[in-house]
Amino acid sequence: MGKRVYHCRVLVSVALLLALGVPGLRVLRAGEVLDNAKILKMAKDGVAIEVILKLMEPGPNPAERAQASNCRFDSSSEAMSEVQKACKDGGWKPEDVTKLQTKIIELANKDQKYLKELVDRALNVFRNADDLEYSLIMRQLVREGKRVVPYLQNKLDVEDERERGGVVDAFGRIGDKSEAVVRNVALMLTDRSKPVRERAAKAVVALSGQTTAEELIAKLNSRNEKLDGVAMALGYLGDQRAIEALAKLLKTSDDGDARLCAAFSLGELRAKTPAAAEALLEAVLDERDEKLRESAARALGRIGDKRAPAYIMKAFHRFRPGRDELIRDLSYFKDIAALEFLVGQVENDDPKVKRATIETLRIMTQENETDAEGWRAILEVLRTRPDWIRADSAQPRIPDAGANRDAAPPRGESGDKSIPTSTR
Image (cartoon, helix red, strand yellow):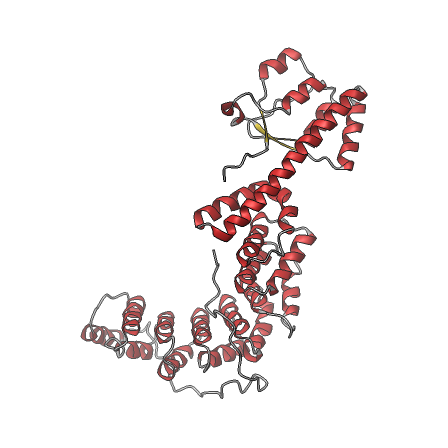
């Protein structure tokens, strides 16, 4: 973090410039960027080489440099040709043109070295640092903007997944929507690492354009790639056209991560279509994946499907893993049958279930009882309130697990199936 930054800090002496009487010269404000465009303008206006070189030098002390501007120069062949033309228009001597070009090349090389070192330092932070350091380095990268993008692109193939994830995150934050960047970020949706795919999903949305949703929906037809990142991106994107494809993915996919993210995204989209509801209700009763059951239950809660409480309660009785999380999803519903069920779990022997039950009851009722007797009294009061409903709490028809997924074979382990969240 302590490496020298090679930005050229310049101090503009107003007294010197006024004494020189240079026509057309605009004094640079503190913090303003001195770049090729400003140099070309001064050269065309006939500003003397001595004045321009003075502007391109660092101030004499740290206090002055802190108030100065940044030099950011382009030394490409095209840029050098533009410098030659501007100096010719300004009536410069050939030797002065050479001096200016030499200085621009020198500062541009230092700037390139700085950007390369910044990205190298960023990768180290992505791999090892805490949240504060991560946030600080991201702010530096965003401040540099598109200039740093080529150096980040060179790091997309690094081995460490935390480094790749940080690079993708940086692309999304910088917001460069150039074709190469958008294409590379889209490719990271199918990265071998789940955390990288999660970051790519958010970055794709940050860089999205008019055709992004259509392109992502089309990707869901692939059978050879991981699709959880694509499904997650569609949820974040919020395009209702994705509902049908996501419901199909949830119902037919063999991949646990893809199904989990499809359920998550259907909740994000508040999908109320019959196909989406059927797929989610079936997923609540999935026999193999507790995370999928919870994700589907939460999605149904966000959608507000009144059939969900009956399915959630059935899943609670049928499966032990993840029961405490399932209970929490009943908080979305002001349903008397769900309330009766919860009151019956207040004295559950499982401490996680008991804690989740009381927390859910407090959210549902806005009351603060602590024991079963108190909650039973609350239940009796709420039975008479018109804003509490008795939803369709009949026993749900239990589908055969996987019967509607093209007789898919049992899914293999697919890593952490938690609800999609940012990894940083």
